[in-house]
Amino acid sequence: MRLNSTPGRVAVIACALLFTFGSTAVANASPGRECDTPSIDRLQQWLASGEGATEPATGSILVPRGRHDYTAKIKFLSNDWHVMVVWLANRFEAEADLTDSRGFWLTYRATDDLHVQLRPASDWSGGAKWVTRIPSTGGELVKRFFSFRPDRWTTLPELGAPAYPLDEALDDARGLVFVGKTPNDLEFRGLRIDGHRPPCVH
Image 1: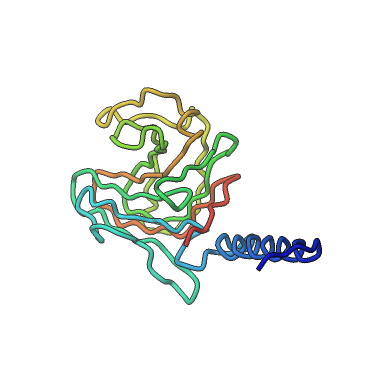
Image 2: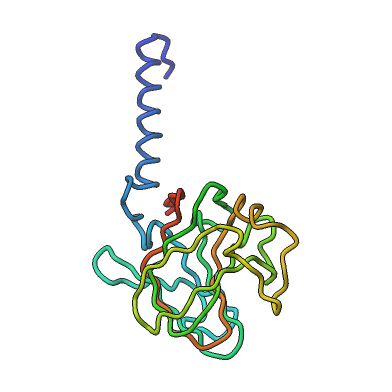
């Protein structure tokens, strides 16, 4: 059916805009809300990568704490490198610009020290990344702030040094990758990144 009248065209355009904005609101959730599927601070992808002996070995590490509340749990089981990943924009293909971010708040418990790598989309693979230490909490739940100031980040000689400055990793950040070489019982209940609101993608 053709709409030749101006009022008819306006009505169609208005309906289309309402549908578009309504769909976006449902997909991204309201400010301050979690996503409709399991998430912690709107981060939906907390993943055991299959690298190192971990429990679980692969897949999502999110487990329910209540009706709409989740925590992320993983165990590093051996004296070898283990890898756990958080995608910052909830899709592997996506990235986040963190150049203006001060850092992130992490609510966690850990029975040993570990490190977190900032991995950019432009150089995702390999171990040669900028890292900051995540100290053991002795198994107690704590909330700590980790700055993105360059002097707070370093490299691990065993994994190698990246060929780019930290600022470049912040510009196209794809994920925070938690790595450790010792047995560790880990739980994450919060990860809020200054200036970054992850989009809910499913």
